[in-house]
Length: 249
Length: 390
Image (cartoon, rainbow over all chains, first blue to last red; front, side):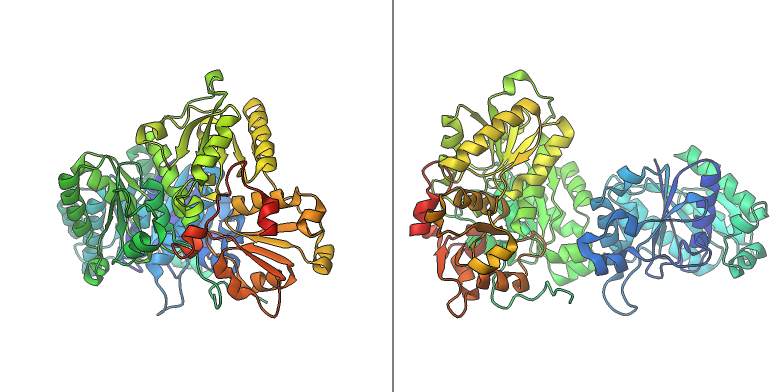
């Protein structure tokens, strides 16, 4: 089983990248599980025609230990298995603990043994602000961490911070950094800035994804870019990335 | 209407999972570290551990403070544990914790890995949350022990007469003669106790847990461990407690059958009345840990009707996560003719119902308060009829 966690600053395009990766892995014949780890619960939105799926935490609140695996995991486009951790009402509760609780719920229900995915993708909220958001890096959930970044300064700072957390966890025998995914915002010297970051982090840029209007056009129709524009430049770069990720593992 | 599981107005709560871990590991030569701001340790040593003043064991609390928790500064715990290991040389370490580490998603496994790298002794992460009952903690601890220290072995013919007793701690059996009588019951039937997990046996004996023909789960606190051993080596198990000669005999027959055909079996409460009849005549309500309650209920139902007031017994037990909801408990007690339970449940009795309350103290519920009155219920000498005539 390949287990990847995708991190990056909020709004940088992690969910778009993750959903596109899931589709590309599915096209390679892989059984994919995508787990959204963000209280916004929109990671798998465009794998379900723009419709939200019930979040794991909402289901657990309602059904408690009566919730079964089928309540938590939903099948989307191309048979991709989708789960959204969800989270508390904004401003209340503890989102990080929520992520941890959602992971424990999957574990208690032997999700990985039963579903037997070939590829698991964790799509994780912006920054590793506390223990809960580090869950996908920890305890054997993911083997490799990929950071999505643009050349914007805030995105680079966030990426550096995430890399620090990954390095810290590596000492505990957990996942390691697989590389950077440059998701272009077309700022000046973008490639150069991200290359400098990669050098500092002793890693490499595994993909250079173009800014592509196809993405928003597809999303306006409630679809993912891989569904409506499978041959777009963005889609082709994502397919190249999947090959690299599989080889790297 | 939706049940409110969080309200306990009359009733107390069972010992927490963290104390369960410490209790399970008490006699095994390790060091147990309770990650918590302090408080759980005194509850454990004062109320949950009857061996505390009679035998030594390395039990520590981390003394987690607010800023360390908020900052996620695991180095404080690691440094303290490493220092304690240098001074005390335990054989292994068990790392468990209460609700604050749980809320900040403390990384038990990762910190255990780091401590182990520094100390070069095994560290077992047991991620308790302080919110569940001892049943969960004891079981997680035993399972972690078996997973780490016992090599799974497939069944061999030499194991035919050997059994393990799982789920044995003072929280369910106190420190009277219960464990000795339970062992004697099985030994008199020709079995060898391969390991009693974990009272009276050494670390080494425990590491041989797979060298037995069958696990006997005598408390639900041993159930997950039994399932784990079943999954890893096909070792079957029987759930039941020998409360009196009849149940002991039934249990022994079950164990023999299970060793022969490798199928899981359990003593059932075997209620003799349907619920309509129960509402009309009242019954004998047994409240306690699940396997104890079911076994005692079966023992009562095995008596001739005259010896049990012509009533049938039925069992009620706490869920490890939710306890017993008072909205279920109160009507059950009102409906019962006789209630057999820990004396702290007496507060639920109202307006002459039930007709009789038979006190049956349980260490995991009332701690030391009624310790001297805990009966010897395990073994062939216990009599359900005498208990009802008390």
